[in-house]
Length: 128
Image 1 (tube, rainbow, N blue to C red):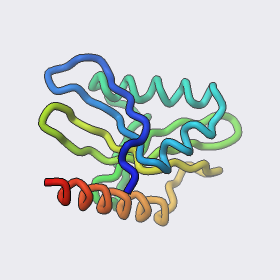
Image 2 (tube, one colour; image 1 turned 60 degrees about the horizontal axis):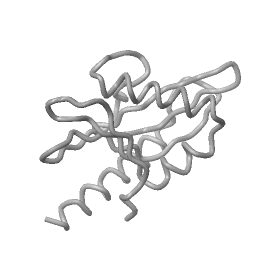
Image 3 (cartoon, one colour; image 1 turned 180 degrees about the vertical axis):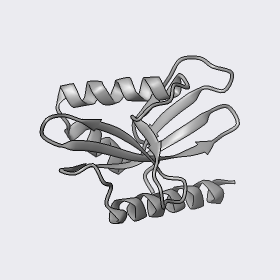
Image 4 (cartoon, helix red, strand yellow; image 1 turned 120 degrees about the horizontal axis):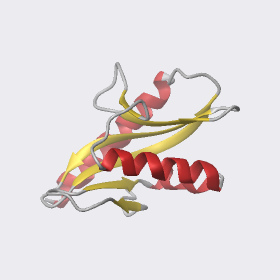
């Protein structure tokens, strides 16, 4: 499993929050135009600072899956993620991203994120 994806490290805190991209999330992020990327980076920063808002919400009917939300006049952009923890960092692991025309997150995308989460955690446990 690819776990060496793009990492965004945020401001220093007692236990810094990092946002780590799995391969699919990294590919989605870099496929977006610069304006969308900048908006997501701002959302990541706000989340890492401990701010709360509609840009990062836990999805109902999921097993610990959250979504970073951005929209413009054309569509909704989403990057799904979950929380994990290591000795020195708190991690938000971004699993994948997708575009949609309506605000509702398809259940198939939630299930996909849950499978990627399970695979990531299994891989992490194998290393121990």
